[in-house]
Amino acid sequence: MAATEERLRKLVDDNLEIEGRAPGSPLDLERNISDAGVSSPDIVAFWKLVNEEFGVDISAEQFAELLTPAALIAYLDAA
Image (cartoon, rainbow, N blue to C red; front, top):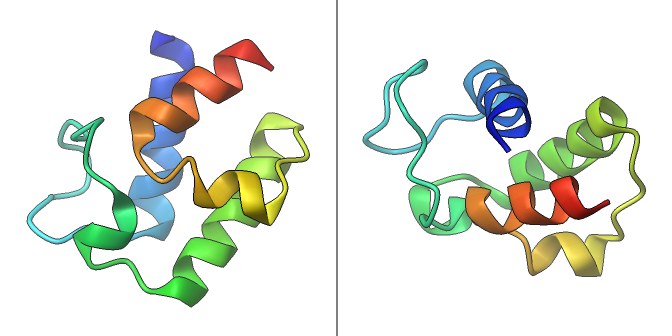
């Protein structure tokens, strides 16, 4: 999980602005990114990056259910 979390945090740091979070600081694993001020277009772009970075094919519908880092990490570790 640690490796997945590190890779995901780097993707977040490089591509998303989360309200109240400085790049490089720990992710709040339970905070929904759409509730953290991330726009829908940015979420779609992030979904594509996650699929590319982790070599997975998460559908848009599945990704919509995985909008907390904890849920996404659990999904990626199980894939």
